Image (cartoon, rainbow over all chains, first blue to last red; front, side):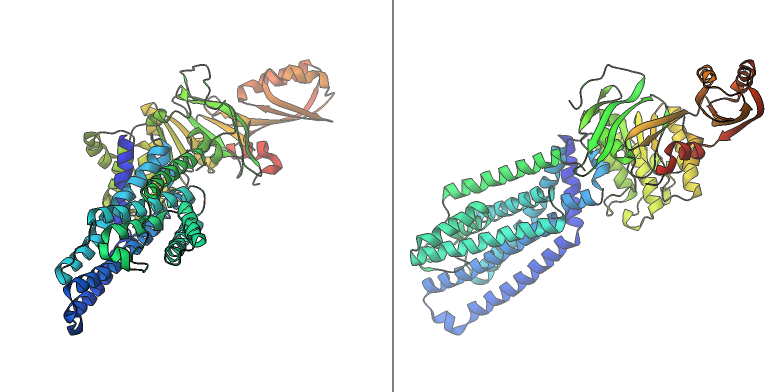
Length: 277
Length: 313
C-alpha cells in the first residue's frame, strides 16, 4: 500500500506545481474580488436598504447562490483541465514506463494518482468555497444553510468528473478525453435546465429528459442538490434560476451518483490493468 | 496460459518460451525463446521493427503477451514483486520535469522499497556515478537529452537490482557518456548483476557483452558467444577441385555452417584453432585445395550477414 501513497504524494505535488492550478486560483481570486465588490455595492445601495430585511436577506442569499454556482463551474473545469492529461499524456510520452516497471501494481498507480488529484481538488474547493462564504458573511451578513453539505456535494461532483477523466484517459488521447468529459457535463447541464423547466411547466416529457441526462451524467444533479441544501427555505419555493433549485434531486439520485463514481473508477482501474503501455 | 511456471532454473536470469505479441494489424513478436544466464551481459540485437522493444516491454509487464511463458530471476515474469530486483532504463528516458535529479532518484528508490537511510546514502552516490553531482538540485526541465539518459541510468540502478534492462542506453550520449555507460555496465557485472542490453551501437555491444542474440520479426535467428570467440566469427573461403556433397557432414564437427557451389566452399567457424583440422580433413577427402582464406567477421558484419537483405526494415 506504500506505493499507492508515494504516487498520491508525487501527483499532489505535480498538480500543485502545474500552472493550470495557479491560473485557476488566480481566476477564482479575480472572481471572488468581483463578487465581493458586487455584493458590497448591492448592500450599500440606498434603494436596496429600504427593502424589508426579510426580502433583503433573500435577495442577498440569492446572490450568494450565484457565487456558489460560479465556483462550482470553476471547480469542475479545474478538475478536468488538471487531470485530463494525467494518464493519456504519460502513456503517450512514455513517462509512465519508468514508474510502471517498478514493484507497483497498476491499480496502485491509478488510484494513487486519483488520490493525489482528489487531495489537490479538496484544497481548491475548500479555498474557493470558503472565499464565497467569507464574502457572504463579512460583506452581506448572510450565511448559507448547510454549507458543509453543500461543499461536500460540490467536491463529490468534482470527484465524479475526475473519475470520468481517468476512465477516458485510459482509453483515449488527452484531447478526446477532455472533449468527451466536458461534453457529458454539458449534456448534464442542459438536462438539469430541462428538468427544472419541466417542473415549472409541469411537463413530464421535459422532466424525464432531464432525469435521463442525469442518469447518463449525474454531475449537474449533484450541483442542484448542493444548491438546494444551501438556499433559504423561501427561495426553495419562490426562486427559479440556474443558481437556485426548484426540484431537488432525490437521495436515490445522490446514491446513484456515488455508485456511478465508484463504477467509473473501477472500470478505469480495470481498463488500465488490461491495456498495453 | 500467461505467466505459467517454467521448471525452476536458478542459474538463469531470464527464460522465455514462445513469447508472442500480436497487435491488431501485425505480429510484433512471433515467438521469442531465449535464455539469459545470471551475471551475464546480454546483447539483444536486431533491425528496427524486429520486436526488440516490444520483447523488453513484455518481460517488464508493460505489454501483455498474446501467448507464451517467461520467468525472470526464477519467478513468473508478471509477478510484481520480482521487479524489486529489476532495473530498467527505457529508450529515450523521460520523467516529470519539475523534479530535481536528486528528487527523481529518491522517488524511484522509494518505489523500489529503499528506506530513508538508504536513500540518504545512495542518492548522492548514484548522482555522482552518472556524473551529475553539479546538477543534483537542478530541475530536469533544464536537462539535455544526454543528462536525462544519465539520470535515467541512475534510477535504473539505485536499488542495486539483480537484473538490469538497458534500452539504447547510449543514445544521446557523447563519447564521454558512452565510456561512462561502458564502465557502469562493467561495474554491474562485477557486482554480479545481469545486464540485458538493447543497443544499435554494435561496436559498443561487441566491447561490452558476453553473449548476443540476433532477432528478426520477434524470433531469435542467431546467437554469438563473445567470450568463447572474442575475435569474432570467422568466415573461410575455399576454392578447390573435386568438391563433393558427401564431405559436408564431416565438416560440421568444426563449422557453424558450410555452403558449396561449383568450386567454391564457404565455411563459418568460431575459432582459428579449428582451421588446420579442416584443411587436413579436406586433403584427406581428396579435395584439391587451391585457396584457403580465413576472414574475421566483426559483430557488425555478422549482424549484416544474419539479417541479410531485411536489414533496416
